[in-house]
Image (cartoon, rainbow, N blue to C red; front, side, top):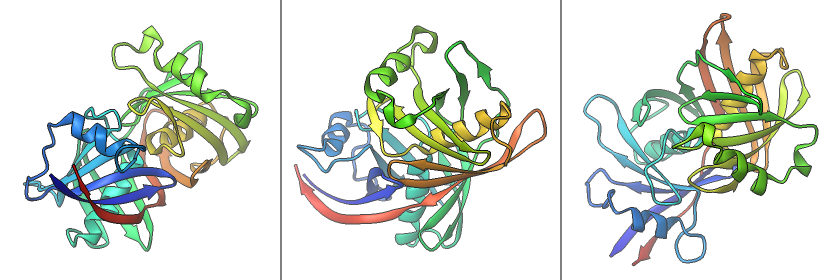
Length: 259
């Protein structure tokens, strides 16, 4: 089998991109997805995204974690999907597309993609931190120095906490720099390791810490290992609306893999 692919990254979150408008890629073959995402025996990525036709929007985004399983919403993946759809000529400067958590809109300006995220009305305070769902479930933990955190072991511990069963959660370790700036590291479920960025995690951290009045601005910059993301939003005291995840989305390379 020969598969033509593209590789995209958004602030270091990297994805194998497949143009599946023809339906030729076997999206139910989870072992194949896992193999393609393997960094030693495949292409290597945090996840795989297939672009497919949609009856009501510009395109449909199917997202798979690197373990081969169908995933929940991926923010940086969504931004990369928009950039990829633009390359394919499906969209221009604005788009509406279909993802696992519903419809999203996005705007493209040069190599920057601004992605609309769903509104958030519930943030739970737990003994360990703040829990919310921004398309994917996230636990937000505030730390003094994010660079000294053992993300691998602590992330795995909280990710598998029975309180989040059966699906588990993503875990974000966040350092507050000032009233509009955060530094963050994330342990992602499905990857089962730290990633260089996490879009839904950045969104969760910004909203949760604004909710806790640890941030004063509704325009938050987040420094992650792979670059910088921004989250803009409105808050009326009950719901977070007009939530946007903003950052780079770039093609790295393309090629054909023989399996």
